[in-house]
Image (tube, rainbow, N blue to C red; front, side, top):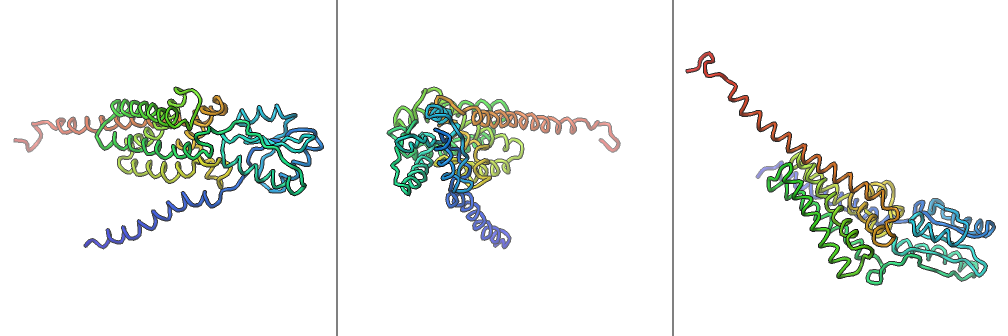
Length: 331
């Protein structure tokens, strides 16, 4: 028995388990608001009191002031804030958007209602942009991140393992992503009803998300070989999926996990899907640009890797044929 291989297996498995636990359990165990954008609206004196209560939780909320309830609603619909507290004569009113994050909406209810109960003042809660009835807790939408990541990883890996190169890989990646988008939209939008909005826009988001992952994997494989496959798969699964914040919000994860998650396709895809499905495309530019860059750079790496391989293979026979038959010692 090869003792080195035995030791490698014994050591490698616990290391992988530790990495997986760190990636998945650490963000979940440290979930809490960190500079969570929250609006306050109303008269200056009343707003000041609300703001002082909210800032008692140091570093939890990033407060944005608005003139009135209408302006606060507009900010929520533009995804500038997750909710707003409106100081009104009849008592405070809490505006939420469960479509942006059911977990954050529940957190705001607990935080604001808890403070109001201490003063004996009832709080009126209004969900400005509600989650769909088919998925009020957002569980189905957040669960779509992993299948899309797996679809992208599988596509990128298959194009490499099947020996596709250059333009052939690009066609396979784009075609598979397009069909993935159509299938995912048919299931999530048409059948389950867990996402709304324009059907073709939703299908485009699903397809672009799958393409960004698949192109990234295939691009790394084209440049680095099987090491690229392993690296890309690890990044998407151990960082992209748990750091995506699909079940909460980027501001609810410990930093820099929240920021890293939005730079990777799973997190950017989840954010873009919410914007397109529930907010008429508000705040969609950032995540759309992230996915596009991953797709473009990945496909570019695929073409570059194919070109480099062709040059390498083309140079070997030429160098062999360049030896003249009349060289000294030739017969």
